[in-house]
Structures are given as structure tokens and as C-alpha cells.
Amino acid sequence: MTETALNKTNEYYAARKQTQISNIVFDTIIYLTLAFVVVATVYPFWNTIAISFNEGLDSLTGGIKLWPRKFTWTNYKNLFVTPRIFDAGKISVTRTVLQTVLSVYCTSMLAYALSRKEFVIRRPLTSILVISMYVNAGLIPGYMLIKKLGLLNKYAVYIIPALVDIFNFILVRTYINGLPDSFVESARIDGANEFKIFMQIIMPLIVPSIAMVCLFTAVNAWNSWFDTYLYCSAKPKLHSLQYVLMSFLQASQNQSSSANDANAMAVAASSGASSNMVTPISIRSSITVIATLPILVVYPFVQKYFVVGMTIGGVKE
Image (tube, rainbow, N blue to C red; front, side):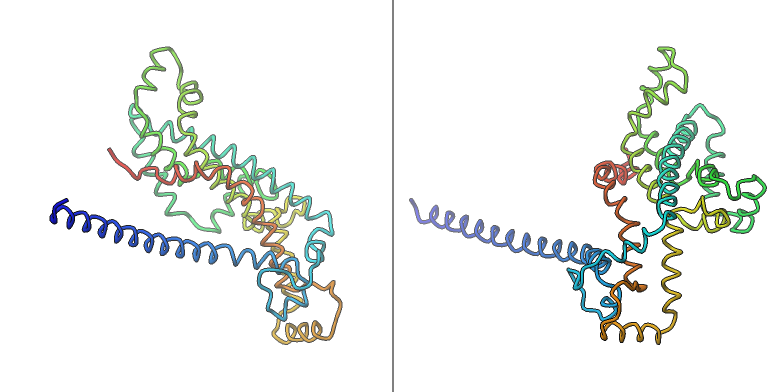
């Protein structure tokens, strides 16, 4: 082997070794960064779970990190001690299911209608809908409208006002606009009407956007409590789970409305007071876990559609 070839070989292996070292350093930085993000994201919720299973008075002394110091079910027992929480849970579950199904169906149908180029007034109607997303009459006119419609203290107040969501409408319409027109034209040639085209042709093709919209709608419906406060607070049978949990939290906070009360409970904790007593921090942690758990269970099943749906409109051809 000549000297020139030997030098080139050495340079090649030196460059290759340097590249490998650079890749290792880069991968290490990436993994450390991702690990930090995971810990920063997971730890607060894990800490909340630990506090929710810890004795209320003991939680006031602080120092709880990954595991409960004094394990107890008292915080959850105080939430589920009355049938009210179960009745509210039924309202929230049925409301979430009905609102998600009906809202997604109506929003998707509207999106399909306003995506058709032959619909001559689709642009002005779309503009009106988009404007309504940014500009509304306000809280008082909205309440008066609900009252005029006779929806106060009615279960329908959870469903009817949410039949069409403009933001979700824009997402679905954008996805439909990206589909080839040949699908619809072929179906029309075969004699299919618009409803059949929508149900059998369009709906199967927009599953990613539908899944994302279902997630958004279900999360909003499950977490909503303010509409219960406005329209159904006078009828306990229609209270949602989030509204009942919020009431529990307010009642617990009222028990320690001042710093002196909190200090008194801390002193009681150090003196060995009753471990059955709940505190705002313990009840708040329990409420957070209960309210979040259903979403955590559902989210992994729609995550792949959620990622696809978030890219809607990101690429234009």
C-alpha cells in the first residue's frame, strides 16, 4: 500500500471516529433533554397522586414527593360518601357520550355541506360561522337566549348549544377539502345521494380528523362545570361531576379560609390529631386525579389519530 493510500485510509477512519463521537454526544444530549421533559411533565401529576393518598393533616407539613408518607383512602372516601357523586358521574358520562356523538355528527355534516364547490353561498356562510367564533354577544345575552328557548334546568342545555363547534368545523372541512373530488363524482355517477355519499364515502376517509374532534369534544364536555353553574345549579339532579367536585373543593377551602386556620391544622397534625380530617390540599389532589383519570384512559387509544389530525392543513400542494 502506498503512503498516499495509507494517509487517506487513516483520514477516513479518523473522520469516521469523530462522526461516531459526535453522534454519541448528540444522542446523549437529546436523551437527557427528553428525560428532563418527561420528569418535568410526569412528576407534578405523580406528586398529586401521592398527596391524594396521604393523610390530609400530614400533607400540610409538606415533604411529600413520590410516595404517600401516611397512606389512607380517607380523601376518596369523603368524595364518594354520598350518592350525589355517583348521580353526577352518570350525568357527566351520558353528557360526554351524547355531546361527542351528536356534535361530531352535526359538525362533520355541516363541514361536508360547506366544502362542496357547487354550494354557491358556502363562502359567506363560512365567513359568518368563523366570525361567530371570535365575536359573541356575551354571557348575559347567552343566558337570556337559553332562557327564551326554555332550556334552563333541562338536560338538553348540555347537548343542543354544543351541536356545532366552529373550530372543529374548520378542522373537518379542511380535511375534506384535501380529499380528491373524484370520490364524490364517482359516487354521484353511480346514483348515490348526498347523504349516502357523506355516510359511506366521506366519513370513512376522515377518520383521523373525526378522532381528533372526538377527543376535543369529549375533553371539553367532561371538564365543563360552568354551564352547570349557569343553567342547572337550581336542579341538583342535573349537576355534573365537575360541578360537584368543585363544590367539594369550595367547601373544603371554606374550612380553612385564612392562614391562621391552616396553621392551626398544621399544629393539629404535629400533635397527632385525627387522621380522618381532610384538608384543601388533599381534597384538591383527589379531585384532580378523579377528573383526569378518564381522559388518561381514553387518550392512548386516539393518540395516533390525534397526531395525524394536528397536521391538517400543514402541507399545501
